[in-house]
Structures are given as C-alpha cells and as structure tokens.
Length: 136
Image (cartoon, rainbow, N blue to C red):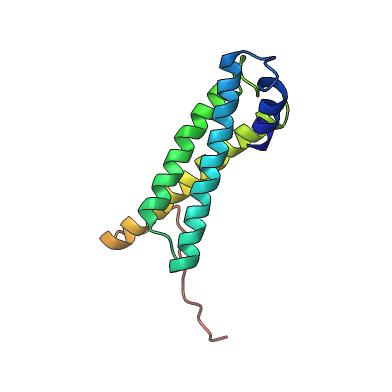
C-alpha cells in the first residue's frame, strides 16, 4: 500500500502516467487498505471475544487471496506500476503468497475440526502419540 501510494503521488499526481497505470496504482492502494481493515477486524474480534468466528476468518482469508491474485495480475503486469522489479513487485507477490498460506491454514483447521466431529481415524500423515511406559 505504501509503495503504491508513493508511486501514485509521484507519477499520477503530476499526470506523467496513463489512466490505466493510475487505476492499477489505486487498486494496489485499495487492496492494501482492505487487507489492513480485514486484519484489524479479526484482531479486534480475537481481543474482544478471545476467538474470532471461524467462518468470518476463513471468508476474509478467501477474499484476500482472490483479490490478491487480481492485484498481482494487474499491478505487476507489463503496464502496471509494479512491472519494474522493486518493492511493489516483490511485496505484491509476498502478500499474495501470505494470503494463500493463510487460507490454506484455515482449510487445514476446517478439515481437522471436521475429522474430530465425525470421529474419523487419523490419517497416516498425522503424528501418532503413544503413552510412555515409566518402568525402567
């Protein structure tokens, strides 16, 4: 968001760049602001209630992942403000990968909760815990 705002101030305010370029820059700013607001809502919910509703957290993670994909496509494309390698390019990709991992974590939590509710046996990929025999 900060890199996009800086680029917008330097290039778009003076009329140097095209409308398409400036719209993509505004989209980068909007995505940064939306991600910040959604994150603050989840943090505030966790502080207020000791846990956030899982559905809202998963929905926000999904929205951020999908919108982050569009942001990477528009902002880092050939005509976008993040086309040259720099902070905006790298952090757009890092933000997208972070939201992807966040959504993957939500899916993992959902599958774990679903397995606990149905009473399924743990899969081979899960670590089996056995009681230790205290006799020596």
